[in-house]
Image (cartoon, rainbow, N blue to C red):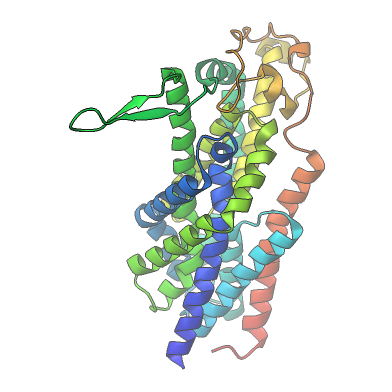
Length: 396
């Protein structure tokens, strides 16, 4: 019977990791695939490698937090299956609603429901986790706001590139050792910009692995069914399976949905959000990349809009009308575009509001509120459901 429960637990863990890979790969490499910088096959391979690296290097801290530190209850094979089921069911609900659920928050919710039912919840650690959930989006907003106000136009000027005809690089096989050279029409600017786009995708994959591998395997580590390294290899492999299969659709979706978000802005948001998530993962704190990234987008657009006003003007009550649509004002050519490099940015306070059109906003406020609401309600459902099951049903 124990062997059967272990096998079921492994299957459910693979299912959770499979879904994580499908959603995380689209977020990490959607812009690169959408701009024809990477093929879907290459993106899936990179996602698998870097998610596994993140899980092995940073992920153990999160696995320990979820698998042993958050609750004092021992994870029996049956309890592990139930907890993993709630995580997988939350992913299913989010897919039906068309909103990506935070597997990290849902995993914490399901395990917290277990701890509340058995009165074994580590209240101190839970308070620390929730505190970071509240603080991290604010940190993302202000970091991105500063970048948007003081550095974003300069970043557009530095990294805006045009995509040339032909291959990015060529391989010269005339010598004894093959050499990689820039393509016939490739400029150094284009090559560097393309490498930045790919590098940010790899960084996001690393961050996803650091935070999310634990969601698939922490209960199995907590009950002693698997050791840390084999468990992370299992979770990373499941994420890779999702990256090579269902992620093909999510990469299309994210790549197309981000067309209103200039690639320079996408790079900034990805770098800020991934850094915060990786930092929290190193502390053993599971974090929601989607919520942090959403607030980063809002902060970046707000900071960009405030460039029309000096700080001295705000003291006088001249507050700018901030819109995240202002990120499109620079009309930044990026990988995939064939436009010229934008003009030099005007100094702060000298830009006209007419230079920051409210064309198409980067997000619809109603949709954003729906995303954030569901990002919080789904983990709450998992918490309540887990509490009811472990409190009133005879689960050993």
